[in-house]
Image (cartoon, rainbow, N blue to C red):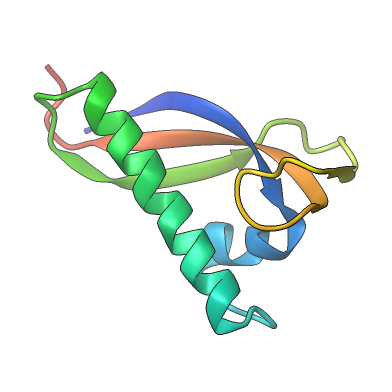
Length: 96
């Protein structure tokens, strides 16, 4: 098994507890759908980069723990909001 970096994304702050810990918190149904669609999009992107690999999932890490959130009109998903830079990694079960 290995972990490979695939992207850095501007992720809405409200989604961080879910992505890092699976904590839905105050997210409503629509927010949860958007986060899950984002996860699927990242996995599809990884599959396009590494088509012969078997994937075990996606992992996330803050790009810079010291960085404060900032407002953007173009988050990775959802409406304009406060975001953090998040590094996205794919877990590969059968590295080639």
